[in-house]
Length: 234
Image (cartoon, rainbow, N blue to C red):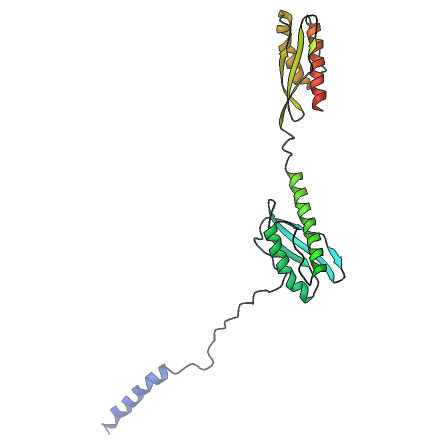
């Protein structure tokens, strides 16, 4: 009987590893979701999506409406996306070709895709409208280079009993920024009067200024030459 006890103990000990490594029934399981398949729709854009986004006009055709959305980096077309297109196999096949041609040509001057003439023509019309709108917006938001450009104009030369008088006027846009005497009488009163006439012109921004006392002849000729330069500026 004493020998039987160790045998029983050993038997129980031998079962412990079995209990420890028995697989769990009904335990949690991990789930791996499949990534969504990439869209093969012809409305996918080509190129970068950042930049200025402009919608073209909606062109109604017998196959259905066509409308593009164009992304610009400055004047460069970086992407084109179809917002509306006919649900037709020829259109689905044609649109990627039209987009690729647009990105290469950087304009709406591209070939019509064979078998999708109607869609191609409508695509190009909507695309051109977007290009025109982008150019218009750029011109509106950016000041004209000539608007603030410096322009120098010579006034008329006037002969007076004191001598010839002629001014040269520099404009910054429409503003008179400088006046220079090209010709003036060699006379003390004229020499003293000219700085006053120029200062008055810059303040008034016109030829409507007072005559300098003691230099009436020079003052009148100065104002006439100045007005001629302003008139020439337009």
